[in-house]
Amino acid sequence: MDNQNLRRALCGISGVHATAYTAEGGVDADLTGRIVERIVAGGIHNVVAAGNTGEFYALSPDEVRLVHDTAVSAARGRSNVVAAVGRSLTEAIALGRRAKEAGANAIMSHQPLDPFAAPQAQAAYFRAIADAVDLPLVAYVRSDAMGLNDLLSVANHPNVAGVKFATTNLMLLAECVRSSDAGTAVWVCGLAEGWAAPFYALGARGFTSGLVNVDPARSLAIHAALEAGDYARARS
Image 1 (cartoon, rainbow, N blue to C red):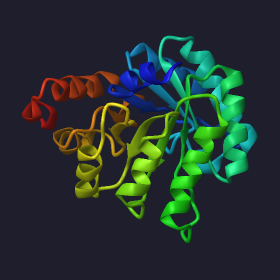
Image 2: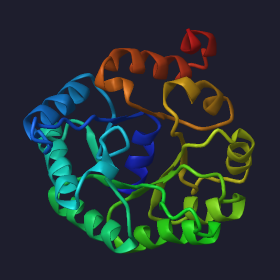
Image 3: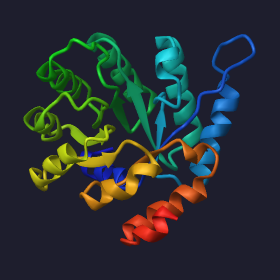
């Protein structure tokens, strides 16, 4: 998938599927596939495989790859599959390259975990993955330690299609949107339906959702209301 097509899709809903487990504690690929099938059949634009709702940090690298494969197989090209990567830079790049081989349309990089990492190092982590993997990247920003310049250095990278902005620092989001142009990545609400209305009001587009695991139609109704500018209906 090229960057522009993914940018358009990110203006929709990015549904983060749950990962099911067997009684023995491994990934239940069959049940996970059925969860993805429900989301895709519900008309959700993007399926995020191994996101937070998908238990990324509880999975081994092999289990992450299994989850990616399961999502690609279940989607069957009907929705985009965005494969989540992360942990060390080496692991993130390897997972991203493997996701391309598996047929994913894009990758999403989790926020680097090191609490002592300087803001510019966090931004450099996202840019390094975008440089090394030949798939469009969504940067999952959960910390507002990065300032405007660092965030824009990520959002203006030619291989970054979207920034999943997942902090409640709305003033920082507003600065990012004001400083963006047509080539800047899409600023996506990364805090799901509950925060989508204020994010839209500030110029973000699309949102992530775990609710799609339960009720895709409700998420789509919220999205339709926001796209129409009907904030009262979206809030209700």
